[in-house]
Structure formats: C-alpha cells, structure tokens
Image (cartoon, rainbow, N blue to C red):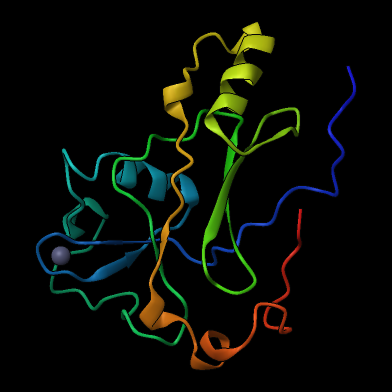
Length: 166
Ligand SMILES: [Zn+2]
C-alpha cells in the first residue's frame, strides 16, 4: 500500500495547556497534554477545580493570567481523550484565522476528517476497540482579542510565525 507523502510530523502550535477552575476562574497549567485532555474530556460532567491538583487550592496564585500577551485558543469541552498511540495536533494558520486539527495515527498517517478516521479504522482491524467517536475534529476557537495587533492588520502572507505547512 502506498504511504502518504509526509514531510515529517505536523507541529502543534500549542505551547501551553491550561484549564480554568469553575469556582475561582483561575487558570492552571497542565504538565502534560494527556492531563489536559483528561480534564477537557470531563469538562461538562465533572468540571475542573483547583483542588484536583495536588497541593493546589483556589487561594493559590494563578499559573497564568488571561491576557493578550499571547494568543489564546479555546477547545470545545468534552472532547474525548485521544486514543492511545494516536496524537491530536492543532496547528494555527499563519494568519491566525483558524486552527486546523488533525490526528496522527500510530503508523504516522495524518488524518484530517471524520470520514478519514472511519476509513482508517476500517483498514486497520487491530484498532477495533477504538471508535470514530473517540476523535473530534472541531477546531479550538481562536480568541480574537488575544491576537497581536500587528498580526490582525497584516495580510496572511506576512512573515509572522514560523509554521510548517503540511
Ligand atoms: Zn479554583
């Protein structure tokens, strides 16, 4: 079977994963993407609170302030945890208009849509315990107010940020 042409793995544009406490609204930094996904997957049923983190209470200082010193994007709540071996990559478009979500499968195939995942799982019966509903291609919402002014004004082809186009 011909392999998909690939120029290396897609690069995530996300530098930091944070979740917000439902009681004090402070932002807490997650040590790993997995930890972030764990909280995100339960956001509606079991919203995050500071005390879920060891040694942290609502009175503890926030890890980061929500401001425009960096661009923020918000994931939709309750996105399922990425199945083991797969990777969910969100990459910011160069003009900061949108993020593109794709999954990288354990064999390095990049999948960009639900039909793509359905086809991939069909071709790979070894993942029969994984369902297409374990994947979510909804892109995080880019918070316009946090996009730096010079980028908002610039045309999409301005040299703004290094980003690999795939
Ligand atoms: Zn709190």
